[in-house]
Length: 430
Image 1 (cartoon, rainbow, N blue to C red):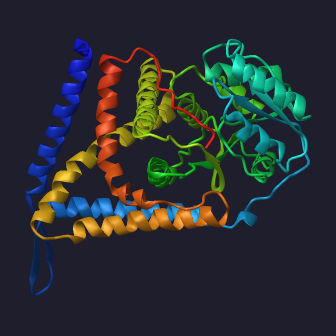
Image 2: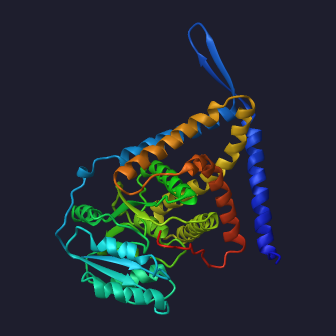
Image 3: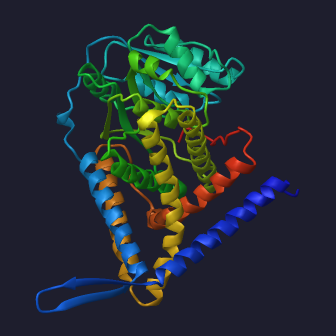
């Protein structure tokens, strides 16, 4: 079966774009740069290739963001107050074709140390296997109830429906395959009762195999990259491992029905000037993709969703609805996209240095990257979140050029062939 014309252009554009970026990196990387220091009696001139400065900047980025992430993950749990008795909290779990995995989130939520908790499962009306398991869990646990999704086919609609059905002033949102630590909700409520609008924990894939370990490493790479923008006041909050007040929900208008409704929610909270507390030492786990196809498909879905959110935000800005924070929000998304494309040009510059025998250009950033992953994984292992990593952790440096290819492919797909559909990862309950 031959691809459609738009698909053919998309594939050809991806290959051509990758080659162009590699060529640009090669041309720029071989340019000679000079740096001069004028002293009283002597002038010192440094002559080096542009590739050297580019790799040095990239190495500094990997080192600094990695250290910031390690510092946060290893920070003391005692720094945040835990509240086990307080106002009613509703935990919302949207489910669709999740009958084999939803026990993970529901059972772990039932073990939560927060006492005044109700758990609301939101199944689709036409998903009988999941609906049947939902009824069984509701019958087995006093904390659990369910409501049918009032906007079938939409995760955002499921969350919005559940929030509007409850009168609780505090709401938490989780995915069906999420394992939630017993202390997570007490910690979140401690922050919300202290005045925070949104509390966001860290969620990592469970590294149970080769592909799953790469997925775990990829999340660490992304979490580290977030640290840089957080220094400028932008904090991510999503539709999983997230707790917020009803006032927050109403101020941003709930979740929009988008491919990545969580990213849209994060930027909406930023534009409203809401206080988001990110605590990556409060860690939950999720099921990782089990095949390379699922890993690629899921990450591409997230990237296409980011482009969709960027497009919507640009339109709001043009209509005069976004303001100064909207402009910063756009800059944040653009920096993420173009930063990923930059990694492809960086590959050529790295090859130039390797040809010249400068192996440290590759080894030094790899040491910082693998060191960050190892220290974070050590913490997650001590906390009982993971059992360890397999040999595929060595593939982590390849994630950076993979981000570039993924971003280029997602941009072209969004412009040429995306029809609003989304890739669904196969979940097994592992």
